[in-house]
Each structure stands twice: as C-alpha cells, then as structure tokens.
Length: 188
Image 1 (cartoon, helix red, strand yellow):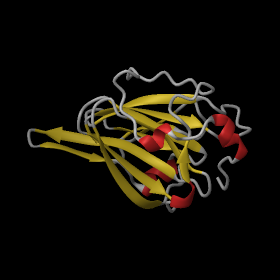
Image 2: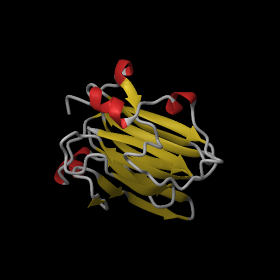
Image 3: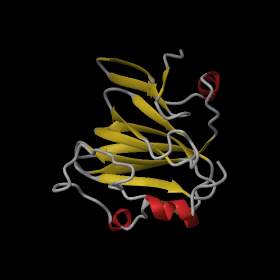
C-alpha cells in the first residue's frame, strides 16, 4: 500500500511528497507518513512531535527555524489551502538563500519534507486552514527564531498582497539575513 510519490525539489534534500490517499462516498483516508517508505526514498525521519496550527485567510507565518538542533519537518494541510515556502539557510550551500513554494491542500494530499538547515513559512489561502507539522528532533524554545517573510535578500513573491496580509508581532520582529549570518543554524 505504498502509493507515495517523492518528488525532489530544486533545493537539495527537500521533497514534495504526494501521499497515499483513497476516497469513496463515505469520505477519504490519507496516509502521510510511514518510516520504512520514507527510508526507501532516502529520508531518515524519526517522528518526535506533532503540531497543528489553524490560520485565517491571508495569514503569513514564518520564516521559522531553530538555530541549535534544528528540526526536520514534514508539513501538510488537513483542511483548507496554504502556499508553503522553504528557504535554504545552509551557509555554503549552492542554493543558500534560494526558496521554493508548493501549494498544499486537503484535496491534493501533498506534503513538504523540510530538511534541517531550512527556514519554513506559509501563506494561508483560505479561512480555517489547518497545517500539521510532524517534527524530527526535540523543540528548542530557547533558539526558536526566524527571518522576516519579506527579507529582500531572499525575495519571496508571496501570493497574499501586503495590504491584506495578517502577521504576528513576533514574525514582524524576526531578524534579517544579515543578522542571521552572525548567528546561523548549527548542528544539522
């Protein structure tokens, strides 16, 4: 019962994953993770914790990460739609500061595998969008931080116009790429 498709993204180590999903008149069933199937695809992922966030339409979250012991993440949408963004923050990587986005939805059953060393964010495209984050590694609240969503050196083109975007105060106070380079992620 594999039914998974692992599509490498342009940023090394990241994947867009089409999950196993079936449905009928009763509804649907989707499998987002199986350790052995992921290992066969070259992804070592040991589920440590799961988070769920709910967002209104036009919320932009991110770009989040932990500077020490960063977590790998498997991100999917269980209700609504989101434009999911990853950014390579591995200094020295050929794709450093490059980004890629994938639309995730409850209907398309896609997930993004976010390797350690990446920033993550998303824009909610519908009210009531529910994101599920499955994380490999322990959460380190003391080094939980990020880079602003609108960092010019990264240049993400968000699908939500800034006039209607909703941000948290925390995300608006995140660091610039220049600040990040003074204290980059480690241990990945």
